[in-house]
Length: 349
Image (cartoon, rainbow, N blue to C red; front, side, top):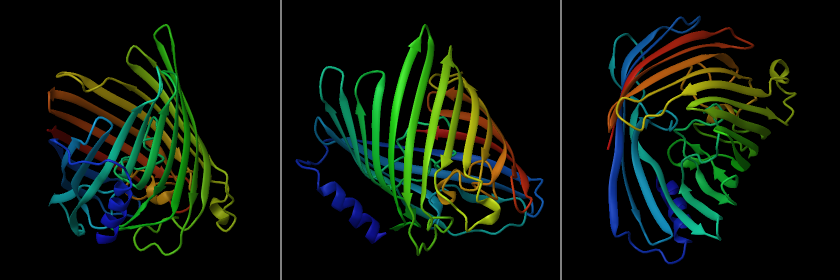
């Protein structure tokens, strides 16, 4: 952890005129989740009760800069798995649990004109690009780097990022550059968002924990777009790798990722419902395997296809209850499938 903290604080110290925040807020959340995974071809069923606990501190430094940090539970050296198992209902291994610095970053906000503004994130930052789903990047992974949002006006925004993804709890692996253009239009109540982007990942040898394709370069073009009308949203995430993977004969042509999602609702007020129905098909090199979402399948983050359905209800101002079902199978190679059922609740403060 020492190497990681040193990198972050070196980055933060480069920001001028930093003072100690005068107003600090404590924030966090807890998720309790029952999870049952079954109907696999080669894996035993798994049934367990899991917990995610997070606690953070945030505050303003001055009129332009703010800072925040947050701790989280998780599996040791696997920061895309924040849940720890607190009860098991059948025989299964018990990985090592951990508490780690999940995020630690500064945010700068600057008005640059009548309608232009910029936001700059520095440190170990949450994923900031705009997409419909999380198939490209697991939302629990917070890389180290810099991200810039430049808002030209209400319709157009440009994003740049240079990020070092994590290898375990205290090291990094590879280098990722991102550029994304966000366009928003409103046609008589029909809201259209179009976000083309380019992702350039430079692989690196020698990963200790994050070993799934992190040694491979992967440059890809992506498009995230959605149509929203009266709270109903139809969205698509699609990506295609521009690299050649001829060393992998069986998967050389497997370079496209696709998610189509129909959703409705937000959880802003007590009694609100939010749900989605998602179809996903993620080919072997359509994403970077190590960093892609793992919320739908136990056995893979790429080379998979299937459906994901989720429903949540806001019970009061600080907690919700919900359920999620995912039915996923492999596309090529070793035949595997599985159904994951989750019943969960989150309390936020």
